[in-house]
Length: 199
Image (cartoon, rainbow, N blue to C red; front, side):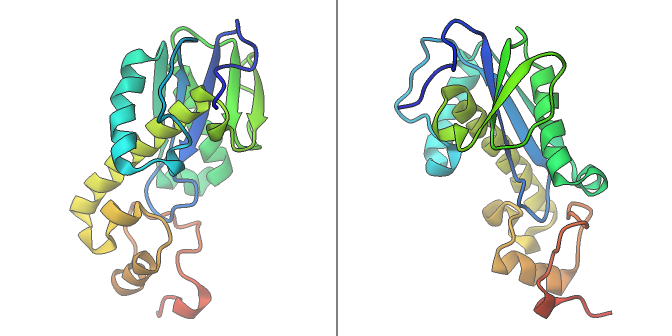
């Protein structure tokens, strides 16, 4: 059973990211403040939900949330500042969009940097514990998936509409065959040693 807030009468937002382990595409974060009376039987960590359930939940969250924000950090900036900093930057940029501003931030995972003067707590597997984080996970996942589906139209050989940029065997085989694109994260190990590029 997901909880609403750590402290019941405090305006808390949840934030989560999607795409941290991908070889291509942005890292996407969302931040959400749900009303204290929000309830939906399906709401859970987005990784535990089917595509259909995520697509049903997204407009419900957007309609019923007090506010939400979604932000992307692109591969060139990921390469510049590293994926951890990029993930946190995306979360901060998503929180920037919230109105009203939260009094507290629930963060999925174990790493975060202070956001302005607002207290936060890092919660391991928080997307399976708190509704605000679960809602953020659904928005981050669906918005990022939309981007990868559009990028697939430009570079169909990588099957990004299916693998979403994650390091699947087919994705890595396509990198081996076709090389990289501007959407690949060049600071990542794109190929295992046995499939290294031949120059």
